[in-house]
Amino acid sequence: MNIQQNQSLMEKLAILTDAAKYDVACTSSGVDRRGNGTGMGNSIAAGICHTFSADGRCVSLLKILFTNECIFNCSYCQNNCNSDVPRASFTPDEVCELTMEFYRRNYIEGLFLSSGIMISPNYTMDLIYQTLYKLRRIHHFNGYIHVKAIPGADPLLVEKAGFLADRMSINLELPTADSLKKLAPYKSRATILKPMRQIQNRITENKNEVALYRSAPRFVPAGQSTQMIIGATPEHDYQIMRVAESLYQKFELKRVFYSAFVNVNQNSELPMLPGGPPLLREHRLYQADWLLRYYDFTVDELLSESRPDFNIYLDPKCDWALRHLECFPVEINRADYRTLLRVPGIGAKSAQRIVKARRMNTLDFQDLKKIGVVLKRALYFITCSGRMMYRTKLEEDYICRNLIGDKTQIPKEIREAGYQQISLFDTGMELAP
Image 1 (tube, rainbow, N blue to C red):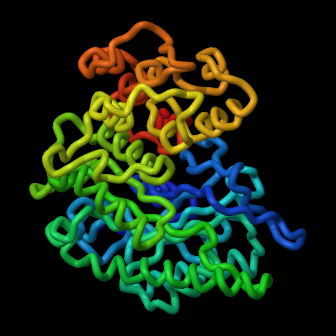
Image 2: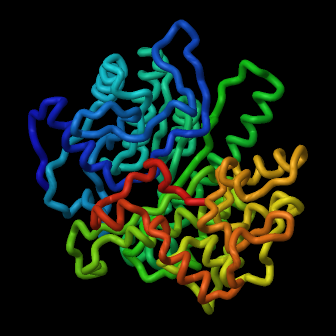
Image 3: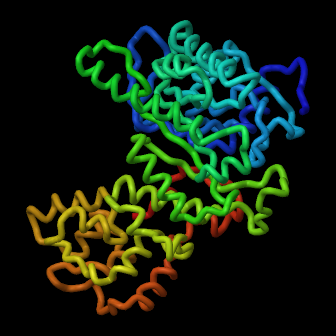
């Protein structure tokens, strides 16, 4: 362990922003808190950006680890106790100073604070709580705060932090308990799920309290999220998505994040990945996740035990449609909203616009283009007043060849930039409708 002594605040910042780059679960959407006139900052969902860049670009979240020291030896983590990396730790006052000064300079609107585990879960969680308390109560910071809850910490500390944070997250780390046991033997699925359940239950209780007493303090108002590392262990996409679906249903998570595995430690227990991190697979998982949350799909409709992985050449909705051509073509002027959502090229907003617009007029293909439908995908699956856009064959191989020819099926960042970590918040990266 390479521990630096007498570090300046900027030296710590350089180490601990770099150490946080593999934690992708830092979305800040989902909460509005306007300034109250007595403090500094506000949190407006629509105006939040999502990362702090070391090159000086003005972005909105200061994304740091409280410390990259850790008592655990997780094989996949660059900050594990056996890694020879420069170490640093902030104090609560230093995190407050950075957050307030960056805010005053208009670099950020909020804070994403994660951490390694220093000394013990309770010790680390208490330091995080102290940081949040000082930001909210002493510095009167009203901006967005997303904080990681530390598995194994005292539930009281988790609850106290939850009344000061907007969102909390606990990383699931790996998709299955067996993989966690193999690569992170000091962690367990039970230890991770226990605080996740605590946060879920307390959110529900707090909503009832706020309904009765509007002045009641709010507990994690933007909900909780988690992250899974993809590609470090042999699970298929079907297993990964079943886990995500279960988390949404049983724990009411706002978001599951998928992080393409990067082999930073060259550990013999980890895959070498000669092609680099599985970024296209990560992208397909995000697209499928979007279908689960907003398009009324289930995992069993998208994958199965006999077909356990996504088609890397087509987005999951196009792939599903090709395997269910008996459901098409869909008549735009009659189909219900749920049916429209299943048409490739039609997103949630365009489906809403179609339902609204056809009350007044019969829609044609030019209308659909103005509404925002991606016709180069949708044209194979829809009719307007009983007619298709062009004479075309409703035949799987023919449609598949044409869809694969659409360059947007594979994100530009992957096609042109090679293997580098994709920003989850770039425009268009979540799902092409």
